[in-house]
Length: 213
Image (cartoon, rainbow, N blue to C red; front, side):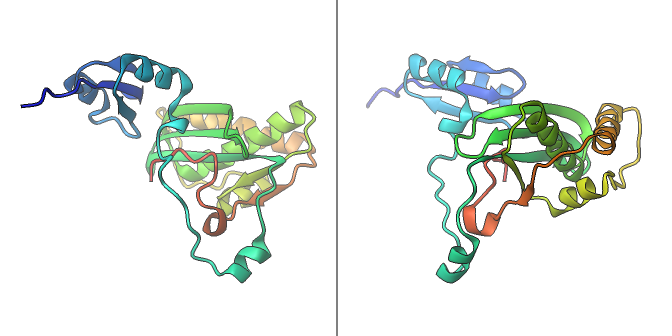
């Protein structure tokens, strides 16, 4: 009878993060944790390196995207403009725990992240992500464009308002404080940044996606 090989478990997102030597210890960190991110490794050194590197190089790498669009449609859409940043939000429930971030479209290097907040919606997160991106690019005097996969958020930014039906309460006050700041920023600042819809059907998930689908 062959001896079972020992494994080490890296938890990037969970009740506690780190490297765990027992599955039961790992399981305790990811149980009932929305959006948990974890993976097993054959050696402690590999698990420790993965923890330091972050999950993007270890999770979902085997998932290849193949567009269902025709060659003619793909040719018409073209390729993404990599002189850009991509933004996205994730919400566990609607409303639910919400966070958003912005990344470099080509390298997927994270440029900013906010949350998770106790209560928000995906649309609010997408709106905040775009405005944060606009402020980020203006601060860095950058000519890059912004990709988002949310038409709703693009409309809210264009109208300089957050048209959410979520009622304000004590739980979501931190989110709405950011919303108020974002609306104020839009009204008080001019920007030349182009906001572009990410073509998910042609290119797959937006690079800023949190990978929870």
